[in-house]
Length: 378
Image (spheres, rainbow, N blue to C red):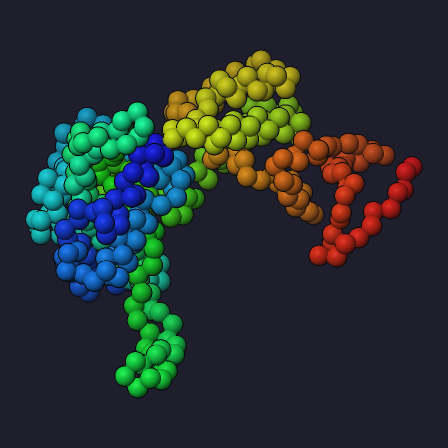
């Protein structure tokens, strides 16, 4: 899926556009006991209720592709087995109407996953979208395909805070009791995927609120596939490969050049409004290293290690080296520099000691206090 396709599905989740007929829910306590099961007709809900529950479901499609949202592909073997894929397929085939299939599915989630210090609400919904054709002006021009998908959201449920509430009958405020409040989803998925504005029955779109923790146990139970690398794991692995293969050539200047090049690609990609996820290959990073004077043998080792660690998958610049910040850290200090000004930072050896230098020609503050930097040329 690309960003434009994702936004198209997100827009489905509002009261005016959705075809969701019922919402199925399973409420589970921290001991993994089912407290309640329910099914609610969306058409019988109040406007406020519809907006709230669709907003929660929409949360399972939140975040950024490649970071919070990851494609889960299925192999032909996984599709042929009587396992997780078949259960997903049957959920969609029956439009969630089969209670036994729903129960079997929710039990797999309950057995595999729990939310620390909170009860858990599992929501399931089924939607049918008449995908309109797009004209050259991006206007709707009749239906082209029907996209039938299921959406799952797993939410923490905690006690709300008691407070003063207004009583319209008595026209005064009184203490109100705390209620069980469902938070935004921590996990979720859409099956099948919406690729090329059509149905891709061979993949799902998986959501994790915490980009650094993708919950492999949930992925194994629900999809039965190997878990993809989280964005944090991608970054750590890339940095590890770069440091190990370049060794002494992994200098401040080389990393600064890699960061600047990747940031430029990210900025240009955003300006182009290309809906596809920005990717970069190990060969392209190798070319940046070559321009920085890194030895050919070390560049070859870097490419080999990337292939082994990432399985030949393309790298995502915003994951492996975030363009939104440029941070330097020593055991004694941490310095954050605006990415646009990263090229101004330099290293120098003065009287035998290594220094990181940042120009201080303009205003300087210490804990919010403007200070003067004296001229002290030596």
